[in-house]
Image (cartoon, rainbow, N blue to C red; front, side):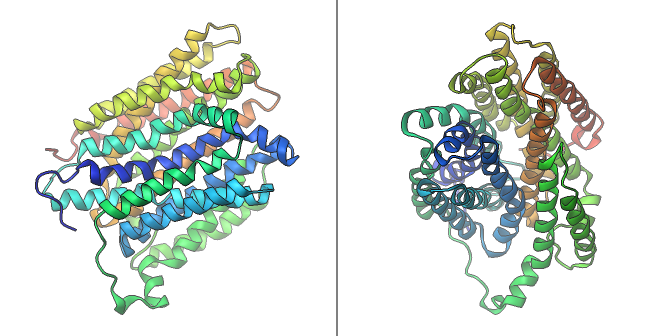
Length: 461
Protein backbone atom coordinates (compact mmCIF):
# COMPACT_ATOMS: atom_id res chain seq x y z
CA UNK A 1 0.00 0.00 0.00
CA UNK A 2 1.70 3.18 -1.12
CA UNK A 3 0.62 6.57 0.14
CA UNK A 4 0.31 9.55 -2.16
CA UNK A 5 3.31 11.80 -1.64
CA UNK A 6 1.40 15.07 -1.41
CA UNK A 7 -1.64 14.28 0.75
CA UNK A 8 -1.39 10.84 2.35
CA UNK A 9 -4.42 11.53 4.55
CA UNK A 10 -6.74 13.20 2.06
CA UNK A 11 -10.50 13.16 2.84
CA UNK A 12 -10.99 10.45 0.23
CA UNK A 13 -8.95 8.13 2.47
CA UNK A 14 -10.13 9.25 5.92
CA UNK A 15 -13.87 9.79 5.35
CA UNK A 16 -14.86 6.10 5.02
CA UNK A 17 -12.80 5.36 8.14
CA UNK A 18 -14.63 8.06 10.09
CA UNK A 19 -18.06 6.96 8.90
CA UNK A 20 -17.32 3.33 9.76
CA UNK A 21 -15.92 4.21 13.18
CA UNK A 22 -19.02 6.26 14.04
CA UNK A 23 -21.37 3.31 13.54
CA UNK A 24 -20.49 1.55 16.79
CA UNK A 25 -20.99 4.48 19.22
CA UNK A 26 -24.11 5.65 17.38
CA UNK A 27 -25.66 2.19 17.59
CA UNK A 28 -24.58 1.88 21.22
CA UNK A 29 -26.61 4.90 22.27
CA UNK A 30 -29.37 5.33 19.67
CA UNK A 31 -31.32 2.34 21.00
CA UNK A 32 -31.96 4.08 24.34
CA UNK A 33 -35.00 6.00 23.11
CA UNK A 34 -36.48 3.00 21.25
CA UNK A 35 -36.65 0.52 24.14
CA UNK A 36 -40.04 1.60 25.53
CA UNK A 37 -41.78 1.70 22.11
CA UNK A 38 -40.30 -1.71 21.28
CA UNK A 39 -41.62 -3.16 24.54
CA UNK A 40 -45.10 -1.72 23.87
CA UNK A 41 -45.39 -3.00 20.30
CA UNK A 42 -43.90 -6.44 21.01
CA UNK A 43 -45.86 -6.76 24.27
CA UNK A 44 -42.86 -7.55 26.44
CA UNK A 45 -41.71 -5.98 29.75
CA UNK A 46 -39.60 -2.86 29.34
CA UNK A 47 -36.84 -4.54 31.35
CA UNK A 48 -36.67 -7.35 28.80
CA UNK A 49 -35.53 -4.94 26.08
CA UNK A 50 -32.32 -4.39 28.04
CA UNK A 51 -30.96 -7.41 26.17
CA UNK A 52 -30.73 -5.19 23.08
CA UNK A 53 -28.17 -3.02 24.88
CA UNK A 54 -26.21 -5.86 26.46
CA UNK A 55 -26.13 -7.87 23.19
CA UNK A 56 -24.30 -5.10 21.34
CA UNK A 57 -21.95 -4.41 24.27
CA UNK A 58 -21.09 -8.09 24.58
CA UNK A 59 -20.57 -8.60 20.84
CA UNK A 60 -18.43 -5.46 20.61
CA UNK A 61 -16.26 -6.29 23.62
CA UNK A 62 -15.36 -9.66 22.07
CA UNK A 63 -15.24 -8.63 18.42
CA UNK A 64 -13.05 -5.52 18.64
CA UNK A 65 -9.66 -7.22 19.27
CA UNK A 66 -10.70 -10.18 17.11
CA UNK A 67 -11.31 -7.86 14.16
CA UNK A 68 -7.96 -6.22 14.82
CA UNK A 69 -6.16 -9.56 14.70
CA UNK A 70 -7.97 -10.54 11.50
CA UNK A 71 -7.02 -7.20 9.95
CA UNK A 72 -3.35 -7.82 10.71
CA UNK A 73 -3.47 -11.26 9.12
CA UNK A 74 -5.94 -10.95 6.23
CA UNK A 75 -5.82 -7.22 5.50
CA UNK A 76 -7.69 -4.24 7.00
CA UNK A 77 -9.69 -3.42 3.87
CA UNK A 78 -11.14 -6.93 3.63
CA UNK A 79 -12.13 -6.97 7.30
CA UNK A 80 -13.50 -3.40 7.15
CA UNK A 81 -15.74 -4.25 4.19
CA UNK A 82 -16.89 -7.49 5.83
CA UNK A 83 -17.86 -5.54 8.94
CA UNK A 84 -19.86 -3.01 6.91
CA UNK A 85 -21.80 -5.85 5.24
CA UNK A 86 -22.63 -7.35 8.65
CA UNK A 87 -23.99 -3.99 9.84
CA UNK A 88 -26.10 -3.73 6.69
CA UNK A 89 -27.49 -7.22 7.35
CA UNK A 90 -28.16 -6.32 10.98
CA UNK A 91 -30.08 -3.21 9.93
CA UNK A 92 -32.28 -5.27 7.61
CA UNK A 93 -32.92 -7.98 10.22
CA UNK A 94 -33.77 -5.41 12.89
CA UNK A 95 -35.97 -3.36 10.60
CA UNK A 96 -37.99 -6.44 9.66
CA UNK A 97 -37.89 -8.03 13.12
CA UNK A 98 -41.15 -9.28 14.56
CA UNK A 99 -39.99 -10.45 17.98
CA UNK A 100 -37.31 -9.74 20.56
CA UNK A 101 -35.19 -12.70 19.42
CA UNK A 102 -34.82 -11.28 15.90
CA UNK A 103 -33.97 -7.85 17.27
CA UNK A 104 -31.34 -9.41 19.52
CA UNK A 105 -29.78 -11.21 16.55
CA UNK A 106 -29.77 -7.89 14.71
CA UNK A 107 -27.94 -6.15 17.56
CA UNK A 108 -25.33 -8.94 17.71
CA UNK A 109 -24.71 -8.61 13.96
CA UNK A 110 -24.44 -4.83 14.29
CA UNK A 111 -22.10 -5.18 17.27
CA UNK A 112 -19.77 -7.56 15.44
CA UNK A 113 -19.88 -5.57 12.21
CA UNK A 114 -19.28 -2.14 13.72
CA UNK A 115 -16.38 -3.52 15.77
CA UNK A 116 -14.26 -3.95 12.64
CA UNK A 117 -14.04 -0.25 11.81
CA UNK A 118 -11.80 1.21 14.54
CA UNK A 119 -9.03 -1.44 14.64
CA UNK A 120 -8.99 -1.61 10.83
CA UNK A 121 -8.78 2.18 10.67
CA UNK A 122 -5.81 2.17 13.06
CA UNK A 123 -4.01 -0.45 10.93
CA UNK A 124 -4.64 1.53 7.75
CA UNK A 125 -3.58 4.82 9.34
CA UNK A 126 -0.41 3.32 10.81
CA UNK A 127 0.59 1.78 7.49
CA UNK A 128 -0.21 4.96 5.58
CA UNK A 129 1.87 7.01 8.05
CA UNK A 130 4.83 4.64 7.67
CA UNK A 131 4.56 4.74 3.87
CA UNK A 132 4.50 8.55 4.02
CA UNK A 133 7.63 8.57 6.22
CA UNK A 134 5.96 10.10 9.29
CA UNK A 135 7.86 9.59 12.56
CA UNK A 136 4.98 10.49 14.87
CA UNK A 137 1.23 10.04 15.01
CA UNK A 138 -0.90 11.89 12.43
CA UNK A 139 -2.73 13.96 15.00
CA UNK A 140 -5.41 15.43 12.77
CA UNK A 141 -6.47 11.99 11.56
CA UNK A 142 -6.58 10.58 15.09
CA UNK A 143 -8.66 13.60 16.06
CA UNK A 144 -11.17 12.72 13.36
CA UNK A 145 -11.37 9.19 14.73
CA UNK A 146 -11.90 10.62 18.21
CA UNK A 147 -14.83 12.70 16.97
CA UNK A 148 -16.28 9.66 15.21
CA UNK A 149 -15.75 7.49 18.29
CA UNK A 150 -16.84 9.53 21.28
CA UNK A 151 -18.61 12.69 20.16
CA UNK A 152 -21.09 10.76 18.04
CA UNK A 153 -22.07 8.61 21.03
CA UNK A 154 -23.43 11.70 22.76
CA UNK A 155 -25.67 12.62 19.82
CA UNK A 156 -27.12 9.11 19.65
CA UNK A 157 -29.94 9.69 22.17
CA UNK A 158 -31.26 12.92 20.59
CA UNK A 159 -30.99 11.43 17.08
CA UNK A 160 -32.76 8.33 18.33
CA UNK A 161 -35.45 10.42 19.97
CA UNK A 162 -36.14 12.33 16.76
CA UNK A 163 -36.09 9.19 14.59
CA UNK A 164 -38.28 7.13 16.88
CA UNK A 165 -40.67 10.02 17.48
CA UNK A 166 -41.05 10.81 13.77
CA UNK A 167 -40.87 7.40 12.08
CA UNK A 168 -41.13 4.68 14.73
CA UNK A 169 -38.69 2.45 16.59
CA UNK A 170 -37.73 0.39 13.52
CA UNK A 171 -35.69 3.31 12.28
CA UNK A 172 -33.28 2.77 15.18
CA UNK A 173 -32.26 -0.26 13.07
CA UNK A 174 -33.11 0.86 9.53
CA UNK A 175 -30.90 3.96 9.78
CA UNK A 176 -27.94 1.61 9.37
CA UNK A 177 -28.95 0.71 5.80
CA UNK A 178 -28.37 4.07 4.04
CA UNK A 179 -25.32 4.87 6.19
CA UNK A 180 -23.63 1.51 5.53
CA UNK A 181 -24.36 1.70 1.80
CA UNK A 182 -22.61 5.08 1.69
CA UNK A 183 -19.68 3.74 3.74
CA UNK A 184 -19.47 0.63 1.55
CA UNK A 185 -19.25 2.61 -1.70
CA UNK A 186 -16.65 4.99 -0.26
CA UNK A 187 -14.54 2.13 1.12
CA UNK A 188 -14.64 0.17 -2.15
CA UNK A 189 -13.62 3.23 -4.14
CA UNK A 190 -11.16 4.91 -1.79
CA UNK A 191 -9.46 2.49 0.59
CA UNK A 192 -6.22 0.94 -0.71
CA UNK A 193 -6.43 -2.72 -1.67
CA UNK A 194 -4.82 -5.29 0.61
CA UNK A 195 -1.88 -7.40 -0.49
CA UNK A 196 -2.83 -10.73 -2.09
CA UNK A 197 -3.39 -13.53 0.42
CA UNK A 198 -0.65 -16.12 0.75
CA UNK A 199 -2.24 -19.22 -0.77
CA UNK A 200 0.39 -21.39 0.85
CA UNK A 201 -1.04 -20.56 4.27
CA UNK A 202 -4.75 -20.79 3.45
CA UNK A 203 -5.50 -24.18 5.03
CA UNK A 204 -7.55 -24.33 8.23
CA UNK A 205 -4.59 -25.35 10.39
CA UNK A 206 -2.36 -22.61 8.97
CA UNK A 207 -5.04 -19.96 9.33
CA UNK A 208 -5.90 -21.13 12.85
CA UNK A 209 -2.26 -20.82 13.85
CA UNK A 210 -1.80 -17.39 12.30
CA UNK A 211 -4.80 -15.87 14.07
CA UNK A 212 -4.49 -18.04 17.23
CA UNK A 213 -8.01 -19.43 16.97
CA UNK A 214 -7.86 -21.22 20.38
CA UNK A 215 -6.83 -17.95 21.99
CA UNK A 216 -9.68 -16.07 20.32
CA UNK A 217 -12.24 -18.68 21.39
CA UNK A 218 -10.90 -18.72 24.95
CA UNK A 219 -10.94 -14.92 25.10
CA UNK A 220 -14.49 -14.83 23.70
CA UNK A 221 -15.73 -17.37 26.26
CA UNK A 222 -14.02 -15.61 29.16
CA UNK A 223 -15.16 -12.15 28.13
CA UNK A 224 -18.73 -13.29 27.51
CA UNK A 225 -18.96 -14.90 30.94
CA UNK A 226 -17.42 -11.85 32.63
CA UNK A 227 -19.80 -9.43 30.91
CA UNK A 228 -22.83 -11.60 31.72
CA UNK A 229 -21.75 -11.64 35.37
CA UNK A 230 -21.23 -7.87 35.50
CA UNK A 231 -24.56 -7.17 33.86
CA UNK A 232 -26.36 -9.43 36.32
CA UNK A 233 -25.35 -7.28 39.28
CA UNK A 234 -26.70 -6.47 41.85
CA UNK A 235 -28.21 -9.97 41.61
CA UNK A 236 -25.08 -11.90 40.59
CA UNK A 237 -25.12 -14.91 38.32
CA UNK A 238 -22.45 -16.99 40.01
CA UNK A 239 -22.54 -19.58 37.24
CA UNK A 240 -21.26 -16.95 34.81
CA UNK A 241 -18.40 -16.08 37.18
CA UNK A 242 -17.53 -19.79 37.47
CA UNK A 243 -17.48 -20.11 33.67
CA UNK A 244 -15.19 -17.08 33.50
CA UNK A 245 -12.74 -18.63 35.95
CA UNK A 246 -12.82 -22.03 34.21
CA UNK A 247 -12.25 -20.46 30.79
CA UNK A 248 -9.77 -17.75 31.76
CA UNK A 249 -7.21 -20.00 33.48
CA UNK A 250 -6.55 -22.42 30.57
CA UNK A 251 -6.73 -19.53 28.08
CA UNK A 252 -4.02 -17.68 29.99
CA UNK A 253 -1.83 -20.79 30.06
CA UNK A 254 -2.33 -21.30 26.32
CA UNK A 255 -1.52 -17.68 25.49
CA UNK A 256 1.67 -17.76 27.58
CA UNK A 257 2.90 -20.72 25.53
CA UNK A 258 1.65 -19.67 22.08
CA UNK A 259 4.26 -18.47 19.58
CA UNK A 260 1.92 -15.81 18.15
CA UNK A 261 -0.67 -15.24 20.92
CA UNK A 262 -3.91 -13.36 20.36
CA UNK A 263 -3.73 -11.86 23.87
CA UNK A 264 -0.01 -11.35 24.52
CA UNK A 265 0.21 -11.33 28.32
CA UNK A 266 4.00 -11.00 28.33
CA UNK A 267 3.98 -8.01 26.02
CA UNK A 268 1.20 -6.37 28.03
CA UNK A 269 3.06 -6.94 31.30
CA UNK A 270 6.26 -5.47 29.86
CA UNK A 271 4.47 -2.51 28.23
CA UNK A 272 3.30 -0.56 31.26
CA UNK A 273 2.39 2.48 29.17
CA UNK A 274 -0.11 0.43 27.20
CA UNK A 275 -1.61 -1.17 30.31
CA UNK A 276 -2.08 2.21 31.99
CA UNK A 277 -3.69 3.56 28.82
CA UNK A 278 -6.23 0.74 28.92
CA UNK A 279 -7.02 1.38 32.59
CA UNK A 280 -7.39 5.14 32.11
CA UNK A 281 -9.74 4.59 29.21
CA UNK A 282 -11.91 2.14 31.15
CA UNK A 283 -12.21 4.39 34.22
CA UNK A 284 -12.89 7.56 32.26
CA UNK A 285 -15.53 5.98 30.05
CA UNK A 286 -17.15 4.67 33.21
CA UNK A 287 -17.66 8.33 34.10
CA UNK A 288 -18.72 9.58 30.67
CA UNK A 289 -21.27 6.81 30.12
CA UNK A 290 -22.58 7.11 33.67
CA UNK A 291 -23.53 10.66 32.73
CA UNK A 292 -25.01 9.60 29.39
CA UNK A 293 -27.16 6.84 30.87
CA UNK A 294 -27.38 7.43 34.64
CA UNK A 295 -28.05 11.15 34.46
CA UNK A 296 -30.48 10.63 31.58
CA UNK A 297 -32.46 8.18 33.69
CA UNK A 298 -32.47 10.62 36.61
CA UNK A 299 -33.49 13.56 34.41
CA UNK A 300 -36.51 11.62 33.14
CA UNK A 301 -37.61 9.98 36.41
CA UNK A 302 -36.71 12.59 39.05
CA UNK A 303 -36.22 15.87 37.20
CA UNK A 304 -39.32 15.43 35.02
CA UNK A 305 -37.91 15.81 31.50
CA UNK A 306 -39.22 13.93 28.48
CA UNK A 307 -37.02 11.46 26.59
CA UNK A 308 -36.30 13.98 23.86
CA UNK A 309 -35.56 16.77 26.36
CA UNK A 310 -33.20 14.54 28.33
CA UNK A 311 -31.41 13.60 25.11
CA UNK A 312 -31.06 17.26 24.13
CA UNK A 313 -29.48 18.00 27.50
CA UNK A 314 -26.56 15.81 26.40
CA UNK A 315 -26.00 17.64 23.13
CA UNK A 316 -23.57 20.13 24.75
CA UNK A 317 -21.38 17.20 25.79
CA UNK A 318 -21.18 15.92 22.22
CA UNK A 319 -20.71 19.40 20.76
CA UNK A 320 -17.84 20.33 23.11
CA UNK A 321 -16.22 16.96 22.56
CA UNK A 322 -16.35 17.39 18.79
CA UNK A 323 -15.10 21.00 18.87
CA UNK A 324 -12.11 20.22 21.08
CA UNK A 325 -11.04 16.88 19.60
CA UNK A 326 -9.55 18.00 16.29
CA UNK A 327 -7.45 21.00 17.48
CA UNK A 328 -6.13 19.02 20.46
CA UNK A 329 -5.25 16.03 18.30
CA UNK A 330 -3.35 18.13 15.74
CA UNK A 331 -0.78 19.01 18.41
CA UNK A 332 -0.13 15.35 19.31
CA UNK A 333 -0.44 16.15 23.02
CA UNK A 334 -0.74 13.32 25.53
CA UNK A 335 -0.07 14.26 29.16
CA UNK A 336 -1.83 17.65 29.10
CA UNK A 337 -5.14 16.35 27.74
CA UNK A 338 -5.06 13.37 30.12
CA UNK A 339 -4.57 15.63 33.15
CA UNK A 340 -7.41 17.84 31.88
CA UNK A 341 -9.54 14.72 31.49
CA UNK A 342 -8.96 13.63 35.08
CA UNK A 343 -9.50 17.12 36.53
CA UNK A 344 -12.72 17.78 34.59
CA UNK A 345 -14.01 14.32 35.48
CA UNK A 346 -13.48 15.15 39.16
CA UNK A 347 -15.16 18.55 38.79
CA UNK A 348 -18.09 17.09 36.89
CA UNK A 349 -18.49 14.29 39.42
CA UNK A 350 -18.53 16.79 42.28
CA UNK A 351 -21.15 18.73 40.33
CA UNK A 352 -23.31 15.59 40.09
CA UNK A 353 -23.13 15.24 43.87
CA UNK A 354 -24.59 18.76 44.20
CA UNK A 355 -27.49 18.32 41.76
CA UNK A 356 -31.05 17.97 43.02
CA UNK A 357 -34.43 17.68 41.32
CA UNK A 358 -34.84 21.39 42.01
CA UNK A 359 -31.58 22.51 40.35
CA UNK A 360 -31.86 25.02 37.49
CA UNK A 361 -31.63 23.50 34.01
CA UNK A 362 -28.48 25.48 33.18
CA UNK A 363 -26.61 23.60 35.93
CA UNK A 364 -27.40 20.30 34.20
CA UNK A 365 -26.13 21.78 30.95
CA UNK A 366 -22.96 22.92 32.74
CA UNK A 367 -22.29 19.38 34.00
CA UNK A 368 -22.82 18.11 30.45
CA UNK A 369 -20.32 20.69 29.14
CA UNK A 370 -17.69 19.67 31.70
CA UNK A 371 -18.00 16.02 30.76
CA UNK A 372 -17.77 17.05 27.11
CA UNK A 373 -14.26 18.29 27.90
CA UNK A 374 -13.59 14.99 29.68
CA UNK A 375 -14.78 13.05 26.64
CA UNK A 376 -12.59 14.95 24.19
CA UNK A 377 -9.42 15.04 26.25
CA UNK A 378 -9.50 11.40 27.34
CA UNK A 379 -10.13 10.16 23.81
CA UNK A 380 -7.38 12.30 22.29
CA UNK A 381 -4.83 11.67 25.05
CA UNK A 382 -5.37 7.94 25.34
CA UNK A 383 -5.68 7.37 21.59
CA UNK A 384 -2.36 9.13 20.94
CA UNK A 385 -0.74 7.29 23.88
CA UNK A 386 -2.01 4.03 22.37
CA UNK A 387 -0.54 4.89 18.96
CA UNK A 388 2.85 5.63 20.53
CA UNK A 389 2.94 2.58 22.82
CA UNK A 390 1.55 -0.07 20.44
CA UNK A 391 3.94 -2.41 18.59
CA UNK A 392 3.51 -1.52 14.89
CA UNK A 393 2.78 -5.11 13.86
CA UNK A 394 0.08 -5.47 16.55
CA UNK A 395 -1.70 -2.13 16.17
CA UNK A 396 -4.96 -3.82 15.13
CA UNK A 397 -5.23 -6.19 18.10
CA UNK A 398 -3.98 -3.54 20.53
CA UNK A 399 -6.53 -1.01 19.22
CA UNK A 400 -9.30 -3.59 19.54
CA UNK A 401 -8.35 -4.29 23.15
CA UNK A 402 -8.37 -0.53 23.76
CA UNK A 403 -12.01 -0.49 22.73
CA UNK A 404 -12.71 -3.64 24.78
CA UNK A 405 -11.45 -1.97 27.95
CA UNK A 406 -13.61 1.03 27.08
CA UNK A 407 -16.62 -1.27 26.84
CA UNK A 408 -15.78 -2.79 30.21
CA UNK A 409 -15.94 0.73 31.63
CA UNK A 410 -19.23 1.33 29.85
CA UNK A 411 -20.72 -1.93 31.09
CA UNK A 412 -19.54 -1.19 34.63
CA UNK A 413 -21.25 2.20 34.43
CA UNK A 414 -24.56 0.49 33.66
CA UNK A 415 -23.99 -1.92 36.57
CA UNK A 416 -23.30 0.96 38.96
CA UNK A 417 -26.36 2.79 37.65
CA UNK A 418 -28.60 -0.22 38.26
CA UNK A 419 -27.25 -0.49 41.82
CA UNK A 420 -27.57 3.18 42.85
CA UNK A 421 -31.01 3.45 41.19
CA UNK A 422 -32.16 0.05 42.41
CA UNK A 423 -35.17 1.59 44.17
CA UNK A 424 -35.79 4.19 41.47
CA UNK A 425 -33.90 7.18 40.10
CA UNK A 426 -33.63 9.67 42.96
CA UNK A 427 -31.41 12.50 44.15
CA UNK A 428 -29.81 10.18 46.70
CA UNK A 429 -28.98 7.63 44.02
CA UNK A 430 -27.52 10.35 41.79
CA UNK A 431 -25.32 11.57 44.64
CA UNK A 432 -24.12 8.00 45.25
CA UNK A 433 -23.25 7.77 41.55
CA UNK A 434 -21.30 11.02 41.82
CA UNK A 435 -19.32 9.66 44.75
CA UNK A 436 -18.32 6.58 42.76
CA UNK A 437 -17.25 8.78 39.87
CA UNK A 438 -15.12 10.94 42.17
CA UNK A 439 -13.24 7.79 43.21
CA UNK A 440 -12.82 6.79 39.54
CA UNK A 441 -11.59 10.29 38.71
CA UNK A 442 -8.97 10.11 41.44
CA UNK A 443 -7.82 6.80 39.95
CA UNK A 444 -7.50 8.39 36.50
CA UNK A 445 -5.56 11.33 37.95
CA UNK A 446 -3.09 9.03 39.72
CA UNK A 447 -2.63 6.89 36.59
CA UNK A 448 -1.73 10.08 34.74
CA UNK A 449 0.41 12.21 37.06
CA UNK A 450 2.42 9.21 38.32
CA UNK A 451 3.08 7.87 34.81
CA UNK A 452 6.66 8.88 34.04
CA UNK A 453 6.34 7.64 30.48
CA UNK A 454 3.88 10.45 29.77
CA UNK A 455 6.47 13.03 30.76
CA UNK A 456 8.73 11.94 27.89
CA UNK A 457 6.56 10.58 25.06
CA UNK A 458 8.08 9.51 21.78
CA UNK A 459 9.18 12.40 19.61
CA UNK A 460 6.53 13.82 17.36
CA UNK A 461 6.85 15.86 14.21
